[in-house]
Length: 207
Image (cartoon, rainbow, N blue to C red; front, side, top):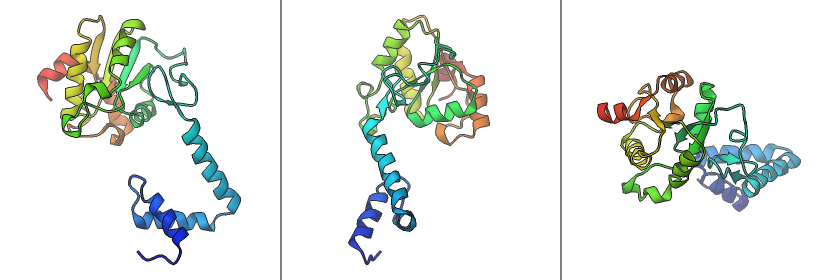
């Protein structure tokens, strides 16, 4: 792709660094911005810069937040004794979209994957164990991707909390093995949450 402007090329290269954005899409986005009013583009850049500099991670669940505690954790109308354990923030959004879960979340920040160099110590597992023991949690629901890495993570955490008096379940296999939570349709995900099963049954039957 040949550019007549170094400024245009630099902008396209930066947009192309975003996930899922190729050079052609990046060029289309940059040309769109060029056609916009300068004030609108300035506002756009300010919003992105402000988001990046001021965004926080909830100190309780590790979800993205504007404040020290996110609005989900601070909502006393939600069930404070039930935790939905997810891999990442996109999965929180996916589960929330189903409107079938009214408890709290815990974002692991990934899943155990030795081949990718991700071990338990790099995830928010210790803080999960602490929450279960300190916050009177009665049930945790694993809503992790149905694949080997997800199952390994469930098994590892299950052993870590085996001594704690908490019910441990996982979403039902409405999600195909190998599928990713964020791409599941809301109806399938909602059914999987409603029909969750004990982790012991999950580990022994299928994965």
